Amino acid sequence: MPRGPRLDAPGTLHQVMVRGIERAVLFWDDADRADLLARLAALAEGGAVMVSAWALLPNHAHVLLRTGGRALARSMRALLTGYAGAFNRRHKRVGHLFQNRYKSIVVEEEPYLFELVRYLHLNPLRAQVIPDLRGLDRSPWTGHSALLETVPRPWQETATILAQFGPTGARARKAYRAFVAAGGAPGPAARGAGWGARAQCGRVGRGGGAAAGEGGHRRRCPGPGRRRIRRAPLARGPGGPAAAPPRPTLESVIARVCRHTATTPEEVAGGGRRPAVTHAREGIAHLWVGALGQSGRRLAPLLGVAPQSVYRAAARGLRGPWSGHPSSEGDVSGSVP
Image (cartoon, rainbow, N blue to C red; front, side, top):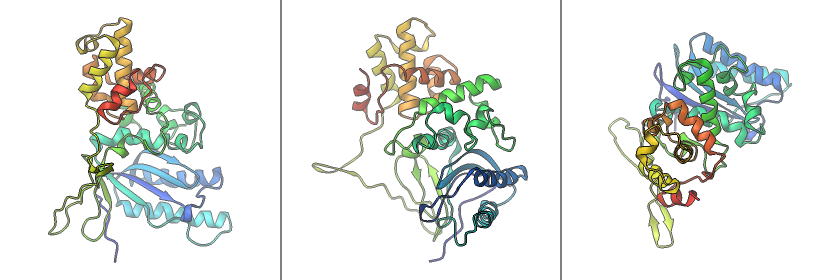
């Protein structure tokens, strides 16, 4: 069956992943990594794409980008064909380098942009390629260091991301770094925030790219003459199929933490500074942003703070008793000592 076109249009945000054939290593040394980045930089500087986040791992690479003046397929063909040819010449190798076509997912910007930036940049920690966050801060092989300006990448689009974390460069970088730290380095079961919660559209018509949409189910993108919705299989329990437990609401997280700290939601939102109120804010921020992977912007007004302060509070919450990763109402209460 022929493959159909990928979903694309100027300004579309894509998460792209490429993998070595048979999971073989894509980057043998730093010269290989620098070569791919030089090619990606040339595309960005030429207006073909705008790159928001990226990470190079031994046998695969992730890029979060927005299409610009040319189609994604044309840009990726230039990037990957050029790199594969140079790689084969450099290492006296022949044959395919990449496994199949690159994978691309169209991302709905509002719910997923910042969570995907964090997810992509934490990949080297999850893969144990980099030992800790301090090493990630200075790694030249992810876009995280460009956002912190420890490794300048003029071609990477950083202003859009940092503008959401603070009014000035230094404050925005500090808040962004706290946001990444609050994400931790979960194992395969957690998979980061924008992945576990999203739905993915399938192919359009007889082929095409995928799209990250809203909700907790898989759905078909509408194709010609067809509009079909297919929900994910229900989890099976001892008594047969059962729906997955609901994720905690923001209100339930706030209520449970307030009960544990003997505070009230009104105190938490009122700007008070007594230790119990501060402790409650840190716990709420860590559970909502760090454990559940939700947006700090929604939480900020309920804590009476600016969005960038939410991420700093979430990072401080890591040092407290708020270390659970709740996935249901019961788990929230279980994660509070």
